[in-house]
Length: 239
Image (cartoon, rainbow, N blue to C red; front, side, top):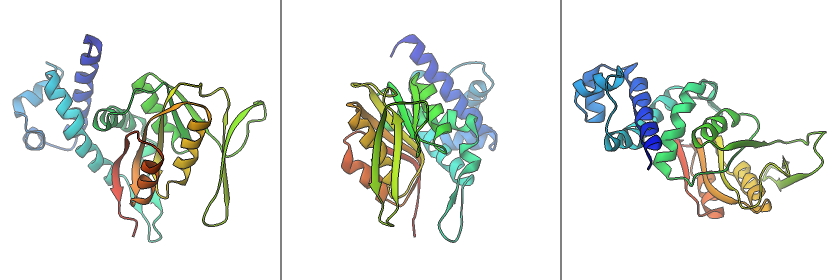
């Protein structure tokens, strides 16, 4: 890790701590993180940066648990199991914190491209792409009229509906490492189509990440397709 990467990690840790401090006293933050309240005060107020090991632990462990808790507080699920996560996916500052936590927690390969599906995954994809300094591309359910060549992935769902995603053929280059992201995974059908697009492009999957996994089916489906890390910030029972 070079000097710039170390500094970036330290600043991300401070950003996580500042987010947690909004709803906690320093004593409560100390209990959560295991760090002295006086040190936390200095970090939050910008007087000093945490050491590298403290910063990594804050982002990987404390940050993941705390952001998952914050995400869950922003989600509502109705009686039919439909998930409303708009309070999370419309908050770019929250997603900007999720990105480094996800990257550190799941050890994704550094991608050249972040791939998602239009439209709800775009804000998360943008946050992940910004963190990794990667390009972001998104597959759509219709073709763009001005684009001549596409990578196309199609699947007939259990319901009988045919789902197709299109991505401009030059959006991913052969040999690129691609991180597949989405705001939510339930059955894994969308992720399977996105992973198929990566394969057709002769690219490499660097990981699959979602904010919310509803049940285990979609996560297991993704793990059957790729050996790359597959992770979710939080999981809800699908019953």
